[in-house]
Image (cartoon, rainbow, N blue to C red; front, side, top):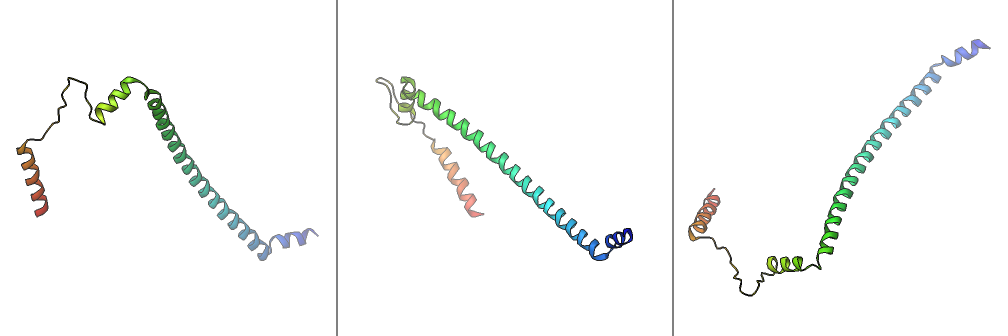
Length: 113
């Protein structure tokens, strides 16, 4: 009997089956490791996106809380609406003619190339 077990284990067909199973197992292991790496990278990206979104949410919450204050309303009125208090003068900076001509000449030179 022991002789037949040895012959069976040394049989080329049996060895080929074991090798095929080992190759398939190694291939599946490699695929699983690759998938895990991709998933871990995706998790890191999503966590970074969550942190960024939470920071933005916190900033927006602060804006909502400050939106009722007089200082915030005045800031919005001045910056976005261009309003001024009575007695104040609104100054709008204007580029000088030389700067505008210099910009135009620079654009013409860029178009020539």
